[in-house]
Length: 112
Length: 108
Image (cartoon, rainbow over all chains, first blue to last red):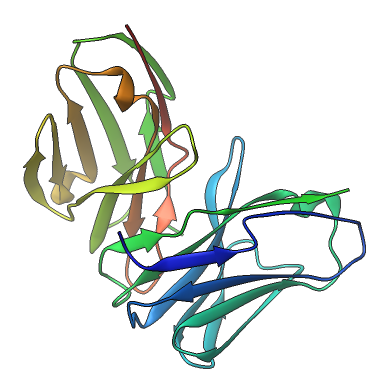
């Protein structure tokens, strides 16, 4: 299994509070991704990174920001959580943009 | 952007039966992967298959890139095959785009 750790794995938070999810990898892969999974939508890309301090938006980036200050860590921040951001969040990594992509175990976030 | 459509959306099988899942995509791709999401939510890589045919035990996959589709074959299905199967593609410089999945239930 690819060395990907997501934290926290489960979180309940209140509307309007900031939340940060962390993805840590031990594989030295260049690319890292954050997806969210919702019923009826499959997995949708939020943001991705193609190197340290190099990030780009995905399909559903509104309300989210990311940071990557070192190769192994990719942080996803919800500046002010809303109920529509209740979801399962998956981090993923790949060696290059066209290579096999590996997923972490997911983070379940509930915004009440 | 590229569109990915999977069929059927839901499938119920008796244990031991065979099945074929289909993935159609709207543009040329340079990466195609099949994933299995188990009932605990884990996403497991099955195949990296932008073209050609691969086999892994009871599972095999074929991608015909020129005709923009891929097929996942499951033979002699088992209850542990239950879950959701996703097809995902990379086209050009865009990161992986997922289909909505096929939910498979294998009944003993």
